[in-house]
Length: 69
Image 1 (cartoon, rainbow, N blue to C red):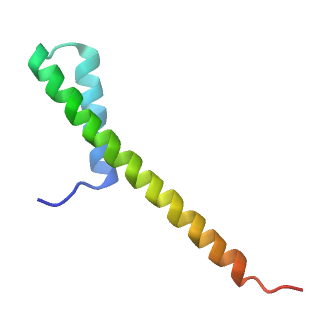
Image 2 (image 1 turned 90 degrees about the vertical axis):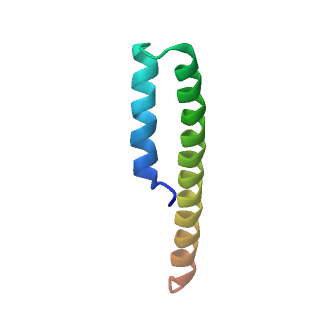
């Protein structure tokens, strides 16, 4: 199975939040949803952190490539 994209994980997480806020899941289902939500949250945060690091690296490269003078 391929890993979800950031956008797919975010959409699934949003759906879980809606279900939990509605309160229509029984206790076992709510726990399962919560655990899945934690997994998705960690995936999203990891992807955002990686993207942030990449952007900072690219910005440093651009800054280093600027001609001086």
